[in-house]
Length: 514
Ligand code: NDP
Ligand code: BG6
Image (cartoon, rainbow, N blue to C red; front, side, top):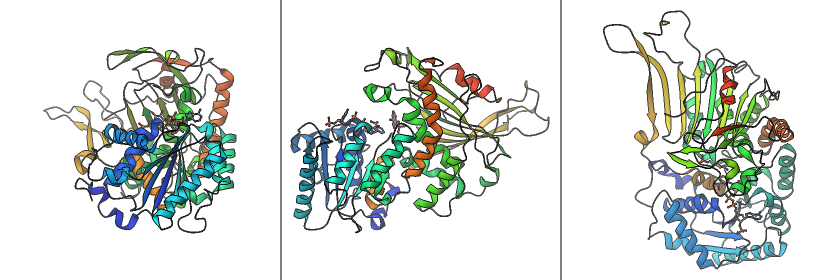
């Protein structure tokens, strides 16, 4: 065990040991593999959380010798791992990294992949679990799934505790129909308990803490409802642009890339009822119930629940950056939104009448993800003189990233000989209490998939319920093309129309961040 093991991990391997595993990553030459998956596996290894028999096979179309893929993996660890490469541990891991070249729609390549896996299993002298991580663009999800089925790889170990598992990246479909089709293809090859639809926001510490905050503290439940809450604001903002991912992003946009998945998970965990247990099905049942209670979005261009916009040239960190239409691989006439803001209404006893505002975008003023629960103003006219009483609504802010923690905004008397007030903040910071360098989302999620725990993954009906809500909006925007598409300057907080969306209900966006 490594010496710098985080306290979070103490004792974990004893009861969460993953079985001997071969993990195959499809799309192994890609961005996600380099930046997240390889570093996550390395850090699991460093924490002694990988099984003794652990093998990684990278799969991609371009032939790459094993040694070159191993060298690339080493570079990825050096560049992207949260902890430096440990020369005592790395060689052992590196020796079990392999590469397999083949097309995603090539049955022969999958038959050879199976032979390779079986050969490793034979050499190991024991049964191994096969885990398939689909980390390619969504356009090839379907052939990969079909080939996993027809090659027999999906059926490996079926009926035993070492049954194959499949982790699939987002976006899971582009609308309800494609998500249903994908679920059907998956169901033809795998049982639901073998399937891990990933949403890496669920692997973030602060997102997992939402359930603890809500259900392990008695003080919140009595006020977590329409009697006390005025509105909820969920912001997932990035300062980065589309970078090298223009080709993918232009087919996706902020709504498919962030809102339909990450932001909806934040909403579901914030608003759902307490589950019967911490078991995967009980939690996911509650999330689905909540998603089903959300009212259809109103699409009226004047009085609708959604606005969209594209970034225009502006300044980020004092540097001039190009607008979306000038980015690489973006067509000059693109109507893809890089920002969207929504107002959602939940039609149940707890939340009737409380607006949930969601916004997400690229090239915004700063990188920040947070959930702000804004409480109602106190009754009575005691503190109304604005020259003396600077007041803000009580707000509980769950800061997902960066600077993870929770802040409570309340009003306080300013010390002095007369009564004057100002809003103040109570902070809890993860880094201060628990130290920094906590595990990355992908570490937790890959480990969970290896041990077969699907609590932090999306169930098939959950993603379909979310798509049901978003599909009419996406179809409507597609029909409109660029009509009604706003723009915002890079480095701003989005278009004016997003502010108007809240003004209509006498609210305004808070300045996100600690
Ligand atoms: P990439 O665009 O880097 O693609 C991954 C690999 O897939 C490529 O290296 C390439 O491998 C293969 N590939 C790329 N385009 C095609 C194509 N048109 N047809 C067939 N194969 C192709 O993707 P990312 O690594 O960025 O993302 C992978 C998945 O993870 C996506 O579903 C994405 O939405 C999701 N994701 C990505 C995040 C990120 O930060 N990158 C974050 C969260 C989710 P080769 O040529 O070797 O076959
Ligand atoms: C991914 C999106 O799912 O999440 C990216 O495809 C986005 O566009 C990323 O940048 C944000 O993740 P994080 O963890 O940096 O907030």
